[in-house]
Each structure stands twice: as C-alpha cells, then as structure tokens.
View (tube, rainbow, N blue to C red):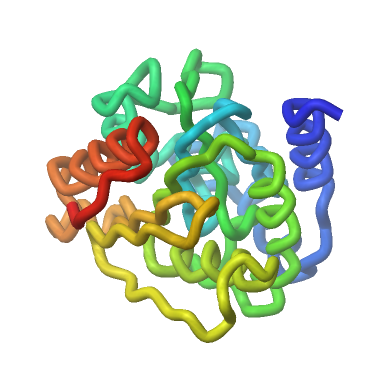
Length: 238
C-alpha cells in the first residue's frame, strides 16, 4: 500500500475514534454550545486528522486541537490566533503557500511539511489526562512509520516534545533512560536514522501576546529546520 493511501486510511480511523469518554463528551458539548462569536458555524466536533505533504521532510507536532479553533474548523491550527502565528511563519519559511488558515478548504497547502498533534481531541483546559495521551499515541506511532522522508521534527511546546520522545522510546528507537531538555531553540541530532529534533515554545496566545514567543524567534526555528532538511549534517544551536 502506498504511504499516501495508508495515511489517508489512518486519518479516517482517527476521525472515527471514540476511545476517551471524557474527550468525546467535551468536544461534542463544545460543538453544541459553541462560542457566541461562532454561533452560526457548524462545528467539526470530532478528532482532528493530520494534514500536509505525505512526502514531507519536516514534521511539526503540536499538543491538541483548540476547542474553538481546530475543534470548530476540523483542521489543526486553523481558525484561531495560534494558527495565524504558525502559518505566517511557515509561509515566510516557504513551507506554506499562504500565511493564514481560517477554515478548511481555504486553499492552504503545505510544501514539504506535515502537521500533526500528540492528542487529536480538544481537552478541557488544554490538559489531556495520561490515559488519553496513551490512547492517542498509536496514531502518532503509525504516522511516524509512514512519514518515511522526515529529516527534522519541530515540537511546539514541552508537551509535544515529551510526547515525541516517548514514542521513539516506546518503539525502541531511543534508550529508555536517555533524556533531552526542552528549551526554545534547542536542537538535538538524535541517533541516525532518526530526524533531528527542534524545540519551540508553543504559539499559544499566552506565549505570543506576552512576547515569550515572537515571530523572529519562530522564524529562527524554521530557518534551522530548513537547513537541517537540506543538509542533515549541519549542527549547532539556533
């Protein structure tokens, strides 16, 4: 089976998932009650599929969908300010054909990049429980197997950073006792043939409104990612 077909089947399985009763109840309640500003919108209210170039060399990993962002629009980092911040940076770096992603089907296309998340349903207070993380992990594990061309992975936030490393350890690709410290701009050359791992603060409003994460800081991460996928031997910190 071609990777593109296998990825499509995997996303169909993700969308149909109902394993976590708490997350199912929350995502569906949010979709019924809605935020006043979006009261006329039809909410997605299901787990979110990943999206992007199936032959991508860059993987971007987030935490989970936003209740009134991805859970409303049906696409990751779409319909909220976090997405505006992220896709603007991806556009500047040449990984996206446009700087905004307000809705599904708005013409956004990723170039050589693939966006996914550690958890596929919006969690209350943006905090998935450990059992919910474990339930979602097989989706990411399968995705990493199918995305065979990835040369660099960008983890948006410590949660995504830890989740990515946990998958590699679970698959036996990293020793269980090895540890890597999260910090914005950190870059780790994992044992070959694993992709390099870059860390960034999450583009949440809390981080971007306070200046903890600025456009220049995120641009630096994606410039480093570009160098890594074009020349995996390059080293150093951002």
